[in-house]
Length: 197
Image (tube, rainbow, N blue to C red; front, side, top):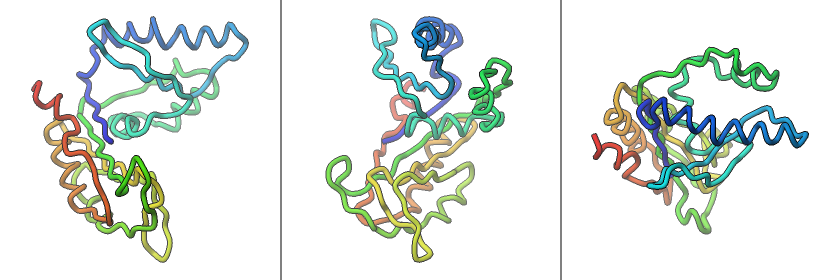
């Protein structure tokens, strides 16, 4: 129902450990088995008292984790994708902002169970005018000159700011400008990180 991204989530030492002990062995193992992999490999991990644990691997971006992550990417995403396809990803000069970002998912009433679609979405333009905010469409359809709900997770309201407190504030400011029947969302995205200070 939401995600956040900062440069402080994983330090450089842990980042290297994750690459060396999880990501690279998986890709190398696939190559050894004759299934060389090129593309997005989403490693779903959980940090536990015993260390990192793998929950899942996906051959796609994670949702909504990707929205705040991409908001911090300062280099060209299309170039990164091209480099991956061509097998030259190590040549890429991928630059990341030190800013923080947060994504709040606005969901249809009833989600994750049964929900109704076809609810008119209001306030998208106003929300998009909040500084540092982008509204990513997930379960929407455009017709009759407007946007309507068409899925369970409807929108990913995402902001970027110099610090996490401001990013959270901006995201919820934008969320408050959007409305559709049955809309609901979590109000505590990045709450634990903010408490840690």
